[in-house]
Image 1 (spheres, one colour):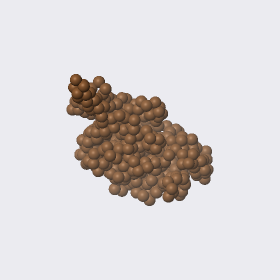
Image 2 (cartoon, helix red, strand yellow; image 1 turned 90 degrees about the vertical axis):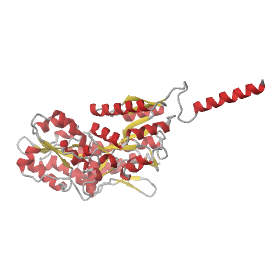
Image 3 (cartoon, one colour; image 1 turned 135 degrees about the horizontal axis):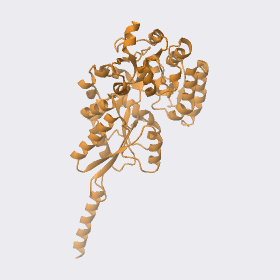
Length: 428
């Protein structure tokens, strides 16, 4: 009798252990349920994400995914609250420039041993650099967006200016000259929507060789605003305050705010993210002819910084392996193309970038795709304390410089002196 009870005890114990191990099912014996928080907001993008979740659920009996809608406007604070409260989603959609503090804080899983080799080798090293912190990889960069010039084609033709291509772009000085030439009665050559001026300025400054953040041998970061860092800010400042070729009123606008003026002929060109083409297609008046031009090139050519959209796994997720498998599924080449088309952006994956749908002349997809090889990790990606530096120091300083309220020397002093005081608190 004792022997029978002992055998029964062992059998039950084995079953219980099997139910609790690894990425197995829930306590009730059902499938694992992963929460996937997506920040998709455009209708086509939301549809693509939900369709992929539905397709996963239809083909994976033991791991189901629950789609959770998030918002870019509040994602940082929302994630911080959910991490600290132990309620973070398993799979997290974010941007690479928002990951550093979460990665260093231990909130995100290191994905190096969780991702398949196919995915790791398909995405270029320059993209992986945007999600690498302290030697670990804390997100998968999957969508990227170059900044481009959207131009009124009719005004370009009338002016007789040379139309740039990715193989023969304008220099920054040529761009300044063209903006002056396109300026006329009741019209500015360019509108700079710089409500959030920091990332746009730093990312475009890479073309001129600007770096701003310099890391020493001990890993400490220092802000140094050097000659190359001043090239792009001077172009914006002088267009507004010296040449009269750039509208001062748009400096406080977001990109969408400038579109009515662009359609109305008030601005001949607007620097925007590549994904704004969707709004142009939907909102442009009938017969309005627009085109995408590459951003100007500097000493480092067409190089510009990007902060790719990312997919991460929460460190507290009890199903990290299953979550990583779902991420790998979402980012199969064909699926990555679907996500890119839905967001009107570029995929990071080498195979996905070869898809013919991304090389068509329609809506100037080919112009953007030609810029993919020139995209680099944004300068601030791995800088701890960057969000505070940006909000408290850089944003007001750039806004005041662009409006003409302070000089270039004062801008340099604010970015370096005040900025390094902020960063120092994160590097003790």
